[in-house]
Length: 69
Image (cartoon, rainbow, N blue to C red):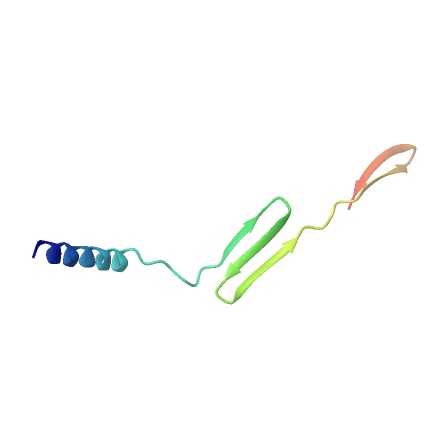
């Protein structure tokens, strides 16, 4: 009888937790990392690599200027 009572209490506690703590399943989550950025949603995920930064030194009016693209 005691074990039956404990099982009923555990099931009711679990059911109460599931009804109170609901989360939205339609959210989109995005993160930006060191090498890649990505988003995950209900219709799938996308990962994007950042383009490489290219810098070069050029002379403009007699002065050295560093230009990055």
